[in-house]
Amino acid sequence: MPRQVFEIVLLLAVFIAIIWAAQFASKKIAGIQLGKQKGKSMQLIEAMYVSPGKMLQIIQVGERFFLIAVYKEGITFLTELNTEDAAPKEEIPLPAGKSPFADYLSKLKEKAGHKDEE
Image 1 (cartoon, one colour):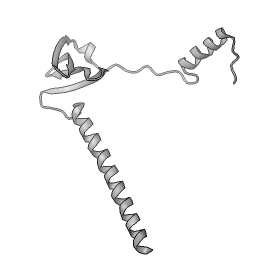
Image 2 (image 1 turned 90 degrees about the vertical axis):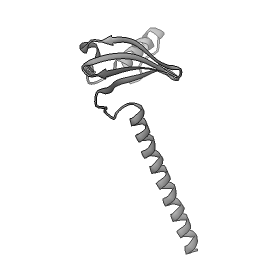
Image 3 (image 1 turned 120 degrees about the vertical axis):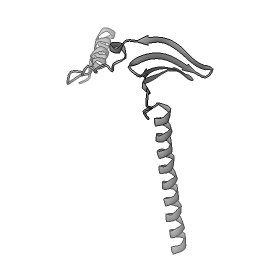
Image 4 (image 1 turned 135 degrees about the vertical axis):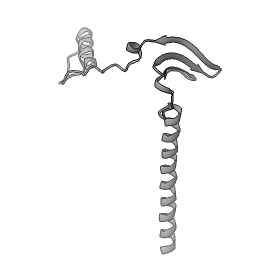
């Protein structure tokens, strides 16, 4: 009986180690893929997937910013961006309380004739 318990504990430890290693590897690969590692003269500023296998990227080369399309077949230059367009925008904080979606949903319920159950 103690041998079986030892084997179960050992298998559980190996399983946890494999899960941890997979998580570590996926984070490492994702960081490399999204360009979180800085180069000396080139840096990926932002990337956005537009469909499977297709994405838009803003890259900085020196002091200049470029918008490119990346897809399975290759890369296409789209345009050069000025500094104001490429700079990260500040997110507008939402007011405390109800979210805009909740307000919109309650208005739709009123139009449909349903009472809000609060």
